[in-house]
Length: 122
Image: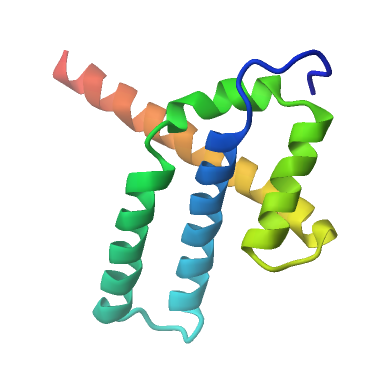
């Protein structure tokens, strides 16, 4: 983590990771009873679309923010999660780490699919 003056802040990290955690929580909630109903998917989808419109507008800035984060900024993200999800800081650290991994995997998947589609058009 960078200890010098940060260039980017962590606002987009907090928004994107919050969205990623909401997505994961929503999927687990839907699958909890072993069946997936259309109504549940519509409710989750509608909720996530509205959140995506505000939380993912600058998701492309997350990698730079993540690379530039300081220890203090990481603590800020963990505190944000603790408050946003009403959990203790230790649990928030775990949620943050898992959300980062999930977000990175989603961004990587998206880039891979995009590249594949471009290569098929060529």
